[in-house]
Length: 216
Image 1: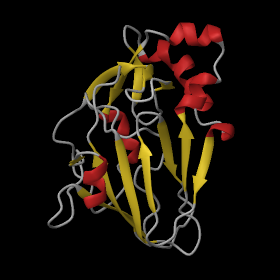
Image 2 (image 1 turned 60 degrees about the vertical axis):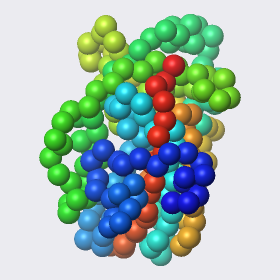
Image 3 (image 1 turned 180 degrees about the horizontal axis):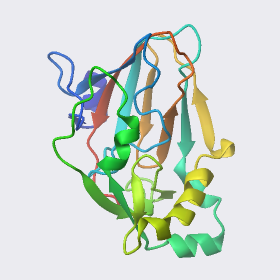
Image 4 (image 1 turned 180 degrees about the vertical axis):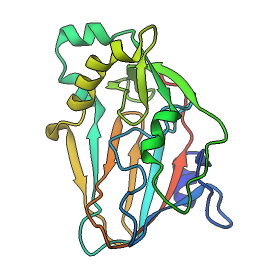
């Protein structure tokens, strides 16, 4: 928590209660009998919020004997690899992101509760990082529903292309956890995917989310 406060402003996660005494620290765990993991899909955290988080921190408390790695994908590289024609097409486009699409990640049997409210936010398809000035793709298959001014059916072909493109192996790295490992990623230019390949084993992590700003 002290490290998180030095890096930004810790905030509570929308749908998961924090651990006792630390409301900004949530437990991310998969138990031995469970088949699904938390957030088990490529995504950028809570893009359905008006001000999505700047970053997230995850520290490993218990890890399985094998598997459970996390993949990360640079959305700078994903944008920069697009053709000039595609960049021109995407410039100025706005994506609609909804918490209802995040239902696919509602996986922990003992922590999921019905959403008290529905979150929806519109953000630029290509956002400019407020610190580096670099452009990054900012859609993700976990939350992005459609483009503003278009139906879901009309949006689907281009979104499907972008979802496949932005996680190509050449844009990614893979993080192998050990107990005590800490990952800290910039949510404004990175997607991540926790790999669900350790059925029958326990994996317990603690996570802190840091406040962000409105994408531009």
